[in-house]
Image: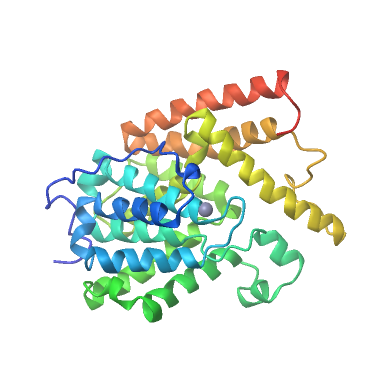
Length: 324
Ligand SMILES: [Zn+2]
């Protein structure tokens, strides 16, 4: 039986209940964050067969955490939040019943590592500065490629016990999917991705029985988990939004210092926080989640939250303070 044919139906559902609104930003201790990530893996029944004991899992997560920087947004909190939301997505019926366990395992690992070593400035910054990284990765998915390569190095050299339960063929598929899913978090191809997903759904829904269909589902899940903080309760979503903007504005100050062209959201003096968040939800997030809802009804609660947040951001932009 191939890895693809294995689904995560076999073991009984875990007792761990996922809360996609968990207040991760309030956690100060790394061990609390590691605990949440461990629970995310253990809470998805189909991945347990690939976990080589909780101790090795914990050691891997701890090691990954060591390589996250203390950025306002792209930090270990975001990694753990993305992993927790991935656990929530993977335990919704459509994915729990149809996605192979190995895919679920890769997606949890990808969620955890997808921004590892992120410097707090974006791909445009690397490219504008013709950095060593930009040259190494030929200006394509620069930071995502770096995160992928570091994750593979940790898995191969630092914590090889993490994949010890995977067969040779499962390991090959794991590495291929890790690449595909991490690179999918590069936002520069977001519009094309939405088009690809919509076209596929209009042609008759998602195909869980074929590698191509599974790849598209996996990419949809990682992209959704990555930007899902916009769909949390407004008070939480706003905290994440502030962190994103703080990171962009820090980059904007560097761009001004170096007389480089400013990124569209990076000018602290001319960007309205609430309007920027509303724009992001309306133009980048909503469509992705609406398409995801076509695969799994329970995601509707995230779409409903996005609609509320969009309205609240617009209200705040009209009546509230101009800046955060
Ligand atoms: Zn991310």
